[in-house]
Image 1 (tube, rainbow, N blue to C red):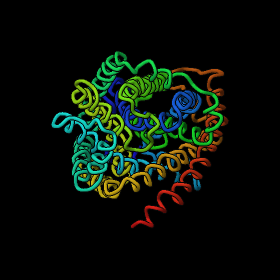
Image 2: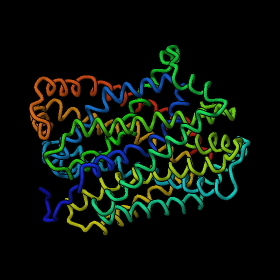
Image 3: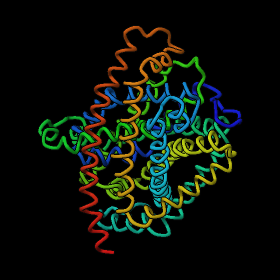
Image 4: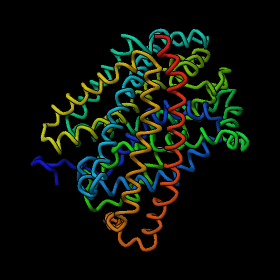
Amino acid sequence: MSSVDIPREQWATRVGFIFAAVGSAVGLGNIWRFPFQVGQEGGAGFLLMYLLFIVLIGFPAMLVEFVVGRRTERNPVGALKEIGSGVWQYVGWIFIATGFVILSYYSVVAGWTIRYTILGLQDGYIADAAEAEGQFVTLASGLDAILFHALFMAAVIAIVAVGIERGIELAVKVMVPAIIVITIGLAIYAATLPGAGEAYSYYLSPEWGVIADNWQSIVPAAAGQAFFTLSLGMGVMITYASYLGEDRNLAEDGAIIIGFDTSIAFITGLIVFPILFTAGVDPADPGAGAIFVSLAAAFGDLTLGWLIGAVFFGTVAIAALSSAISLMEVVVSYIIDERGISRPTAAIGIGGAMFLLGVPSAYDLVLLDLFDLFADQILLVLGGLLLMILVGWSLPDLAVDELQRGIGDLGSLGPAWIWAVRIPVILVLLVALVLGILDYYEFLTGPFAEWVGDQ
């Protein structure tokens, strides 16, 4: 039960919950982050590792967050206070911090997608890569970026303030089907482009030498991407599951959510890389602005590229909104449950604070990288790792008992799930965390230190 006497909302339908969870997972993580991660980490090798981590750690970890949320019917902080003791009860704060930080800069990137949708409809895209990069630098920072950051955050606040059934559930029932239909349509179009064959080879044929030479960067990137794209380690699935009834089959719902999410990520690659190869753009161009520079330049080189580009960036904006409402709901649910503040007031207050934290990311791309790497490779993985240790080693009976509700006796599958959490999930997250910390240290002593020296 909640710590204050406020009636707790629930999903009106199973479809609403699944669409909300899919909408959270199918966001910028899939359409913004996934393509540049694949390009930056060498193509098909990263894709293979990513898919492996989705199965090995994504599904078992999602079930852990589901059972914690439904068992406690609380936000991440309240949930960990209920099932944890000692220092474990404070783990929930890591989820709150993670969601707060991610949405602060996520909103800035989402603002770019709105700006680039408008750009395609107004002036079209610049085909020259150097000019496109200059245009991106101009649009991605400064007053323009702050204004679109504010516009996007206002939309998120409006939806979350209305509530679960009339706000989030209603919105995702429109957005998620639209995302699915449009991405499939764009993938069919991309398959007709002359560079599709070469792109598919790059995207779908792993080079084992690339994996062996670069596993130190591929492993944390793939693990972080798997967690990021499934909205794990942020408290989203704990929060969304807290609004569920006991009769839901969590394993079935989790499999559906992961299936949709992974399919959209995969299809996004089938869209992006044929366009890049057709335009002769290097897919390995790294960085947060990759799709806004390389892909925008590619659109500028295609017939009707302005229209295809506007549709693509509009789809990314919709996907970003479906994810952003879940991140804000994590923090808002804490304010409602633990502080007794009304939903509209909580949404406005939290959204305003997230907007302010995001302003530095809109000021300079280096600062966006500072927040992104810290949240994605450290906070995200750390929160997930600690929750897996707590549930897998201290609360296995509670977890299996909760998972069986809506399913029935799991038999040997229950212990198998727990051991999957105890060994491969925890081991992969531990390795990813160590490598992520080292990678972040290199960033701090490299690009960030150089940026500070130039100020």
